[in-house]
Image (tube, rainbow, N blue to C red; front, side, top):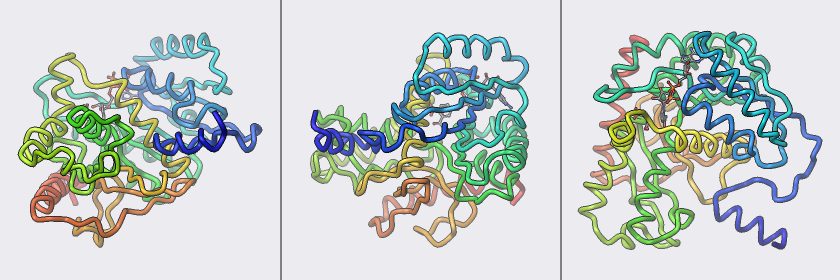
Length: 351
Ligand code: NAD
Ligand code: LMR
């Protein structure tokens, strides 16, 4: 394929990898992954090694952090990563010491946490997982690069990201984000199935708020093949009812079907999230991610990690897309999920 055709196809797909590398000698990116030996972690490490996060030309150093109890499984994962002979991998550092694992990290994907089991609510995880994110924030503060980009996956992801940032005061709060990209991907896939479109033809669905059942997948600004999505779907009742609850409860649906929580799709979404932080978003395409709220945007209270539509410059400077029209229906749903995040913050940090 001609180079310019390839670039435009990659952009249509929302991919910003340079079609031709500018410089093959770029230093390797240091990526710390916690919970590397777990379900998501194993997929994630393999996806990164295959180039899904930083493209096929970028070398990475995988810094894999696990609990001592999972050391043996981690050893097995490293054996497999080596056996894959992945050309993107410059080195692998497996460790049970966060001070080693986060050392000089450019990117940290925090997956390690207890997952929700059948019948559990996400709030049950808050107590269990808060301590992990305090300790990891403190370690990141001490040894990671000050420019480190942190993506929190472990649940409750938004509030864990907030806790982590509180314990890493030397790193800008803007460098901490939480994953709602999986929700965005789920919503895109539902709309694509419903309309017969390809997933890359569905754009700018927004996930507002918490990565939980209160999240609000907003279709009012979305497009399908460039046309307003709601016109193409032509079924407001479905969009405002079954579609919303399908996306909101998809995590629980996967758990009830598989007996364990989503893994490959979560790892893929984490790759896409970090990809966009690294390379920037394609102009005109929003990426939903949970970022710190400044209190002046869309009426969302200050100091919670709330998922907004973001545009990102290469290198990770993000801004929230402004002037998205918000109707009464959306307003109520955006406030409800903000309220849940305020409650979680109160439980976790007492503020
Ligand atoms: P898992 O139990 O398979 O793996 C978790 C791994 O983390 C285990 O290997 C465990 O040893 C490790 N771990 C626990 N505490 C650690 C610590 N302090 N330091 C380093 N490693 C630690 O779980 P999983 O299915 O991979 O899920 C991981 C987390 O991701 C869960 O909290 C889950 O709810 C969450 N999740 C989030 C999303 C999202 O979209 N945000 C999607 C799916 C799952
Ligand atoms: C998901 O969305 O699949 C995860 O957050 C798992 C869960 O507990 O819902």
